[in-house]
Image (cartoon, rainbow, N blue to C red; front, side, top):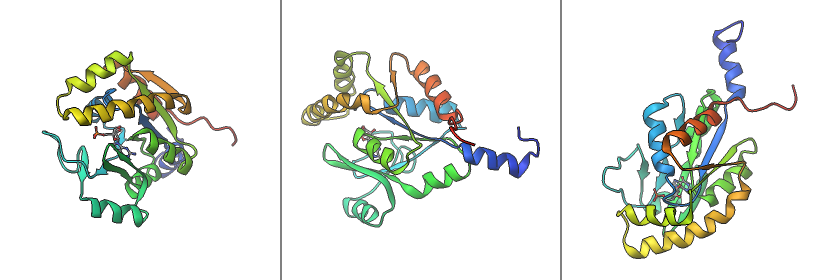
Length: 203
Ligand code: 5GP
């Protein structure tokens, strides 16, 4: 606690707010990890992306995603409203910029879940961001998870497997790798990273 409390404390937190990016191949378990953090860690703010993909059963507009049309998405991208965006196996995904900067300015630890292309854009746009790569325990396990999900047709699964091969090669561009052996362990490690104060190299 800052000795003066109140506004000064908030100001101290403001300077320390960290933007963390969680990325990794499709079906590695990013959304399961994010869902667990949503339930158990209200101290972490999870960015809600816009996407042109159709909702899966159980997904709620404004919770998992904002589901928009392609013209709506393109208008947002052209208007500079997205911090980053990417096309992923035929659909567009992007992070609305303003909600992220508002949370960071308020000192709230913020987590984005994006694909590898989006993570690279965040690296360029926000130099202090921490990039976390979520890796599967093995390639066989990733194939099993992607196939077992049962929400995508065969052609989409094969596109996602091709994308996953490229995404796995990007691991060394990230600051840290967490291996998804257990959702509970990964969440604990990730929340510790998200809420840690960034190291300051100068006063
Ligand atoms: P899904 O369709 O399975 O929800 O997501 C497909 C991929 O899009 C996942 O790798 C997910 O991390 C990524 N994704 C979700 N939201 C965003 C976003 O806002 N930007 C980018 N670049 N990728 C996203």
